[in-house]
Amino acid sequence: DADVTQTPRNRITKTGKRIMLECSQTKGHDRMYWYRQDPGLGLRLIYYSFDVKDINKGEISDGYSVSRQAQAKFSLSLESAIPNQTALYFCATSHGTGGQPQHFGDGTRLSIL
Amino acid sequence: AQSVTQPDIHITVSEGASLELRCNYSYGATPYLFWYVQSPGQGLQLLLKYFSGDTLVQGIKGFEAEFKRSQSSFNLRKPSVHWSDAAEYFCAVGRYSGGGADGLTFGKGTHLIIQP
Image 1 (spheres, chains in turn purple, cyan):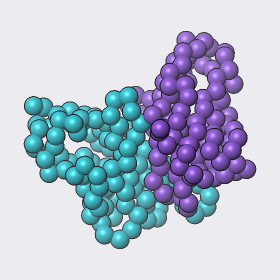
Image 2: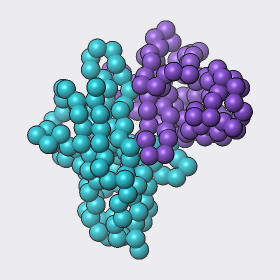
Image 3: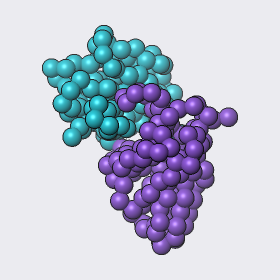
Image 4: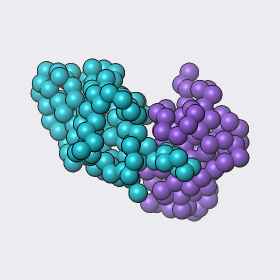
């Protein structure tokens, strides 16, 4: 089984819908992250969480919200999806102090029509 | 704010030839630097990292990278590429500054094509 699992792997939905992407990990890491990847732009940080009670905005948090339900679970929500949120979304985890390597899930491909 | 530049969007290399992928960063303090590889349909896999110490770091799959503070560079190298090395390569710098920030800032990636 994968250490960092993202569900769903693919999702097609319509503008205005509420979407939730889920991430769970079995690595026991305390820190979790959400990134989006767009062609030619690399990955950009949306939100990150040090632990269940500590959530922080990244570079591009507008239009997104997150929930850290447990140490192992970190969900990303789009309250009212818009087409320019079509992207590949990655969850990642890391352990300990900042700057440690991150371990990525396989991604969720989200298309908003 | 930190930034990462990967000047080459695409690079084509013949199988068996040497490879160098360029990465320049902007960061106020000693950076935490990473190279990741992404194969089609996959997540990102860590190739190597630099935190401190020896400026030449060894990674997986025969890759190495050299940190040059004077040039703000962290170029990735491999002496002989294999067809399986075809992928997207990302350089990243840690956002960690001791002030509570975390996560990675990525370059836009370099797409590596291997010619037979």
